[in-house]
Image (cartoon, rainbow, N blue to C red; front, side, top):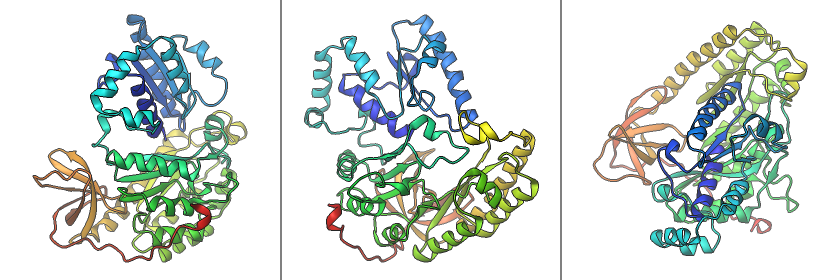
Length: 449
């Protein structure tokens, strides 16, 4: 979400005539976009703010902006008092305060006109379309589109509702228009974002849901692939699974966190399901979507988590053999239910031990999963070059490298896998096409047009 917000901000600044620089400290305008979902991320933000304070002391004309979850949606007065050297504070997904600040400082219109003319962007800008930053146009293959801002589910450990506010969905027409503009600027894959993306549309009166949105985006010319994240076990519907199974552009890739494998921990997390519910859902997804890859999130060391309860998490991960597990140590966040009512009583070294145990288990699981692709021909959307090789991802979001002298950026390549590991695969260009599943495409419902 922050990456999408940063790109939107960059495009707004370019409308004012600013240009991107690869050296942050040399920029005239510097924005720190922050995440506070875990304490480690917040600590990094404070560390960078300390560096910016020194920079501002030596270069007082630089404009410094602070954006994202550290600012949140509430009054930033405490932050203003703590960091008086910051010029502008911006809530998540809201570039307006910085744009207004810079306009008030009198950026020259002539600079703007020259900038637009140089890059032939006048028509796009005058139409008001969202654009990618110039340095990414024609080079960015995969882009994020936020479709649900905020969250109203309020898990006991999660700070997002306090920092990003209640959930609100963007209209289908607005999202489709953004996808069309991104496609016109070279983007081939879009990923729809929401804290609980499955809840998309619940706050829109016309009753559209995420499945409707997928059908609409499937018709956008130039978009080759569509993904969405993150799902919630309680909100993934049969209709959504059907859309993934039936639409050729929608990838067989689901992110659905379990967070913990013990029912009592799940209850205190306010997740709204049991381990048995989650197991049943994984079975249903696999039955409905052939060749699907399923990723999950897990928190270890939640308040009160015993060794036996952790073992439940370990066992469910061992049994389900999912394609990826993002494991994090519990970190109490301000204002959350768990921080206010539950002591953080699992020792840091024990949290670390549990995290490493799950990481080791998952590495073995993924190595086995990826090993089954050896010799197969996979469809790879090529993103860029890395250390002399082309790098891209399969429909299941698995990383693949191959060598070739031609320019493959933004193209679909059929790659025969010659080596597999837990985190990536190596291959060579294949003459035969990739094995893409046959599908039936339904028309977008009339009510969703």
